[in-house]
Length: 244
Image 1 (cartoon, rainbow, N blue to C red):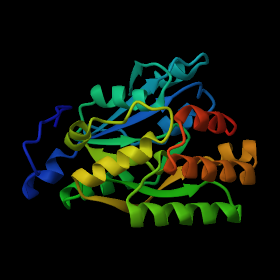
Image 2 (image 1 turned 135 degrees about the vertical axis):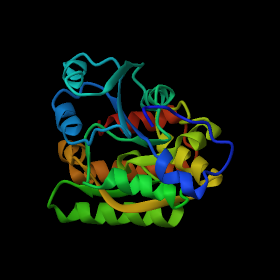
Image 3 (image 1 turned 135 degrees about the horizontal axis):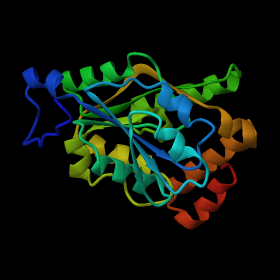
Image 4 (image 1 turned 60 degrees about the vertical axis):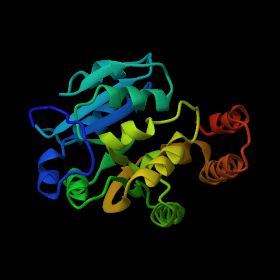
């Protein structure tokens, strides 16, 4: 494909899907110098893969370290939804994969995403695997997989992927401080066929461990219930900061 994108007039013909599946991996970052080299060093690179790091104004060496890899680095304000939208705007791929900076992809994940397009799917996510032997994380993973498979509601740390034409059609991520991933997955569910791949995305347990597993999990539940009850975002954001 030589880095070219295409506009879709409709569904992708069966015989073209495997050819068109160039993937743009979009990674929003902010002060991630401790882990950015690990995630970028663990990625696959090639003609059918583009990596875009969207920095939200880091004050550490995140940008410097990212520039050591064959990636495109662009600047944005610090807002994950805005950063991901800017990454998508700068992308050349037919499929977009949104990856958090503390997540690693299982080998073969990108091919599985490309195959999903060939098989007629328009988006989805991977199976979350938290990098810890603590049993409570197995419960968190199981509940997340159940939600994703039954409701087709995906969280950002499950590595959401979507066809670019679908992304553009739904208007990308809503410019909100929280739950942009949930709203986005609901939008793409209405416009296309989504799935949960068997491939894993390995997630750092740092957020749970730094704040206490029970506390972080409880606050996550409160945030979700508050979101479902339409609690104002500014109130929810105060709770969210307690675990960041």
